[in-house]
Image (cartoon, rainbow, N blue to C red; front, side):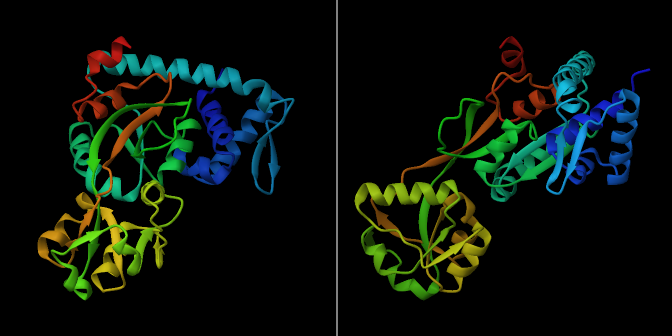
Length: 304
């Protein structure tokens, strides 16, 4: 008799390329994953993986031969389960959501909590990373839906469904620079002051640099940080002038620990977009989550 759980473990290891990562995704121990692979290899009479120092690699005469059929079979079975869940009006399974820490905190947290309250039977997995890596996670089927900082380069494998939140990048300062409060500044004036920006791997940094280059302004940072939270702390303590979406600094701006500089011309608005793998079948659990944003009704999604 075919043991589907063994094939699910095999497929997860093949996709993750690692016993450890597969165990984390499956919520079982690493020895249990290893044992499942050995059991399937014994049943099939052939090695399925080469155990390498860097991870697990499919064997040419075993794993590579069956991976395509296993993928199709598990997809079909997942579709059957999903159709039954949809008929019952009760989603099941898991929902993997990818976004940056800030998008989770400021945009998605309330919706995720509300979704869990309505559908507690759906296991929610949060994949926290920067936008380029969330795109990679979508492409490699490690994520069902991604929330991306835009703009990004067009990707033939990814469908960008909608913009769910506008972001207005502004320059902010703390009490150390209070003399600048209310003063009209140009972007060229900012070159006189130490700037605190996100690191070069982020969409935010790329957008600011592109904006500066279009005007002939050098936005070279005095300090690079890897999070908005750390930027706000440094700006608040007088280490320099930061550039951050207004929506991510509203509390500090309201309390007065930070203030917004009047800079002209202002940076163009950006947005956060929702994306899925192109031509992927959307699980019922995902359709219901997307419905919360009011832009993708379930009926429309089903007709596509």
